[in-house]
Length: 414
Image (tube, rainbow, N blue to C red; front, side, top):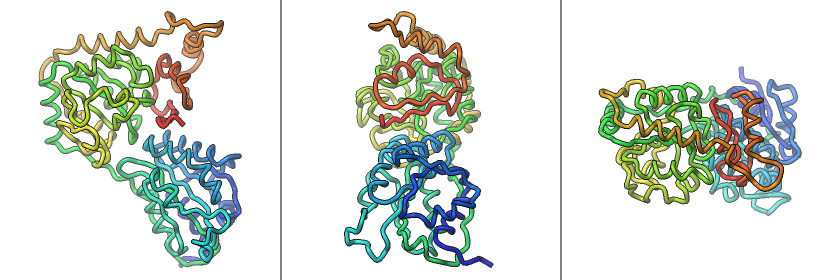
């Protein structure tokens, strides 16, 4: 028999049902019933000093694990402080659920103390914003929040919690654990891709976005090896392909290697997997023409709405990077490819570009030498975390990312 529980207890039980083991928060009086329920729950709680930091911690966890990062903040200024983390999750396609306290239901619409319309505040940066006014609907709507945060192109979801709803008692069953939806490419699409590759003379691949995994990275690396395909990583997505791989040609970040850009512009087939080719990797939307690139584009993305949104591809494949990478095992060259020297030259360009020895800056502190030292003393699995600013180019250019989930860097620049 389902017991009578407060809304706060029902909410925490849903988090447990969906596999949440850790959350981040700045405590506030608008969700005290949740804090009470968390006291005896099997969930680790990291209490933060500022809501922006709490949201960014949750976003970082979501980015590294692929599971929704969970954050709780209080209403009004707590929510606006957290908005920076929500924006990062939006632009980085990171699953995140932000729970926000709200004024009591009877005070809504009166501009009560710290009242905000969260649909208006977060509508442009969240995949979904919902206010739960009935404790009976907590399992339903929280389940939907997990689904929305992880499906298609992942992103942030904001859930507003009126404080009197959280103290309301209700009898309702828990939801089942959410299921991540995978979109797989069709056999005909993969056969068409193989034909396009076989007919090309200078193809390249650009990797980006989210919904990757360690296995998917390994599978794509094996595919690139079989085809001797030059591979470039999108802005702050260098963990998607090992820098030591002979097919790696560098990253499309700030101050990208001019030789790298020239190779992409001279290519006769661009395979874009997972990313959107947004402003930074597209070098201010100049690398490929909009809406019709001169280079034939094969675009693979988990969200159908992203396919053709900016660039009209010759072939659009609606699939997650994980599902697409798994299907690549069936895409093998039927004859020797004519561009192996092109791949070798691209990797040689990267090795020369990532050598800090010729780079000298004013003053005694040489950042190139610092990065060289870090290569000697840090393990390959080290997680590098950086924020905004051109200073980050030292890491992007000179650290050889070789391990998945080792790069924590916001594409939003926050």
